[in-house]
Image (cartoon, rainbow, N blue to C red):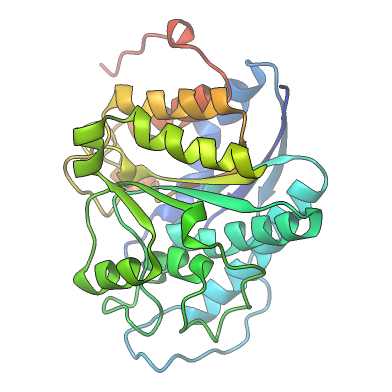
Length: 309
């Protein structure tokens, strides 16, 4: 099926403390994301980079939390951009930017799903569960809170109300391998399935994903995919400030994307935590673009050989 992909740059790094993610959108464009998509027969509309609105002062009882006003501003802007793209029948691709952008992108997708009367599902491809709230985070980094916001946890009073919290059976955490004890306890209370690397090692990459996709299909759902660079093993994707060993291999990551393409269920996509300042000759940006191409229908025998020498 031909898609109209709407590229939305989200140049933010306020959700964490290591500068560089704001350069992500430019890196994706330089790595040829638009060309990779149009080569597969899809249409691309690049909306440029979103910009912060005038900020309103905001406070949080947790003194560790930083950049709250900026995060609220980005949440509102990216909510509106994602919803608008979906409302006009497009396939939004959010090019980040740290993972706090999902506070806005998924809420925008949820508002659209609610308006059209369809359930929204979330596939979280990440080393981390991101299930802290602004009240529980010790680092104060709000890129570790989106799944909690999406699932309707308390503690987000400063942010816009989430349009329709996603129930646990519609959330799939996939590739997880770094979870704080407080997050783990909260996840168990919410009964959200954690397909961590132990599960994937025991059952393989395919079975847990197909089970989730079957659930999405049976419900007639929309599917938002949030792909964090640290889902990948740092040996193949070094350009991220939160590297965790033991991530998805090149082949495993492409298989996930190919399965998602074959399902024809994905309706919106985040690309997050790319920090070009940490990259090696653009290899991580190019890999992420290659993964997008697999999601959009590129077959294994179409993939070009590339030298980094």
